[in-house]
Length: 315
Ligand SMILES: NC(=O)c1ccc[n+]([C@@H]2O[C@H](COP(=O)([O-])OP(=O)(O)OC[C@H]3O[C@@H](n4cnc5c(N)ncnc54)[C@H](OP(=O)(O)O)[C@@H]3O)[C@@H](O)[C@H]2O)c1
Image (cartoon, rainbow, N blue to C red; front, side, top):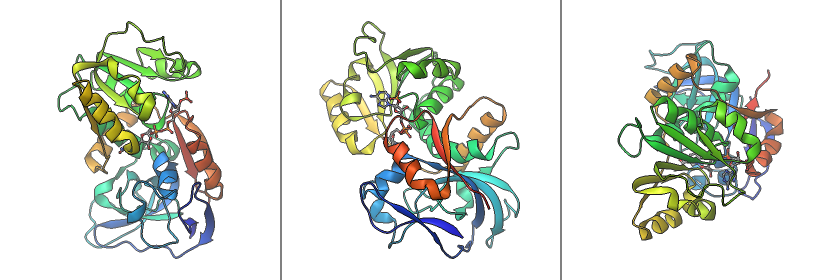
């Protein structure tokens, strides 16, 4: 099979297309022929030696934690799936998942059937960001009915899904920060208010929020801490700056937490159900072929992607 291999951690990491052996599924696993695989910031951060780099094994390595495709073979003890089933998933994180290759092994606990009405492109791009959004919104431990939610970075992969999931789960008011050019589409996804983060004055006088999903972190996240209610919860996604944000919140007497999203088949099934009902739209900024992965990573690294980037496989 063809795979994009990384031979050394570097910033930017450079991937090369090579032929490697097709993996073999073990007990409780399936072999998926990839049709689409999402590219996420964690991929280029790991390629640069950050995040879960130390867990990826010996070089050369294959990265990528989400995909959609067709089951080609099942391992022992697999009853819930069979060959030719169409599936998608967020696999294994933070251990190696190796989705940026034509074939990938998945534990059955990390995949769900892909609804017929959902394209492979959408399914391949939704699971990591969608489950992250789902788990971040649940961190307060209470339901979102009547809550005011703020999503920092609402145009990003996680952000645009967090807006939609928050509204579906009953949030009364969902506001977000994004460039003005993104406001129209974020409004169609359910955002009640959009603020341009380039205009620091634009949120003056806005009521505070019960829950903030911070997809930006660092100084940009810190600049908005005042918008959290004193008894609210701030969930900061970028792990590199999480401690900085948590301690700044503590100094203001407010509660902030980091998160590490984890694969979850039940949440994936719930996402699949809402997507099948047409209630969640995955914005796709651009798709690339597997051999164009370095360009896809470069685009993700720019930090100005609307929705998701996807690798589309052709055979
Ligand atoms: N801890 C976890 O488990 C976990 C899981 C998933 C993701 N993450 C992290 O969460 C972060 C977000 O992930 P993602 O996939 O959503 O990233 P992404 O898709 O790359 O986010 C890009 C978006 O960020 C917006 N943006 C950039 N600077 C901004 C600012 N100052 N204010 C508001 N929006 C801004 C951009 O909008 P414009 O184009 O308008 O500038 C763009 O739409 C990343 O750091 C990622 O590594 C963590």
